[in-house]
Structure formats: C-alpha cells, structure tokens
Image (tube, rainbow, N blue to C red):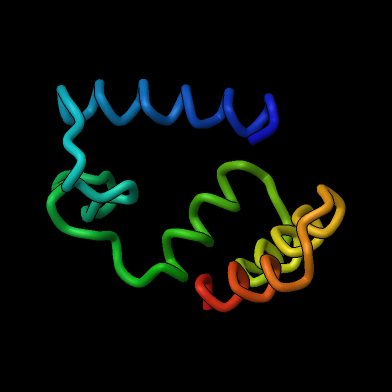
Length: 93
C-alpha cells in the first residue's frame, strides 16, 4: 500500500468510526444506506455502485477490473514467479 492509499484509508476509517461510533470486523467496508450510509451490518449493493461512488469521490478514472491488471503487474515487478502469480490471480477471480 503506497502512502497516498494509506492516507485515504486512514481518513476513511476516521469518517466511518465517527459515523457509526465504532468498527467491528463483521461490518461491511461499504455500508448500506442512501443517501448516507446508515447500516454497517448490510452491504452497499451492488459492488459496482460502491466502486462508482468511491471512484467518483476520489476523482479516479478506471474500471474495477483494472485493479487486477495492476495487481499482476506489481507482482511481476516485485520478482514473484509465474506460478505464484498464476495462483494469486486465480484466487482473486
């Protein structure tokens, strides 16, 4: 995780805990509720909506699937072997 992503995650955790007053492992990262999340025990559906909203607020362009390509590229550049990349790529599909 790079510094920018880490900073965004820290800010999101602050927002999340201020909204729900705590955080529990079984709660969803993208909670249900419109126009404002109000139930962390239910997921925002569908994932496409969560990705579109998050991408828009972060002013990021790209498809969710692009993350898979980045993941594989980063693995290859870090020196991971072909077998490792195949196994990890298979587990993310």
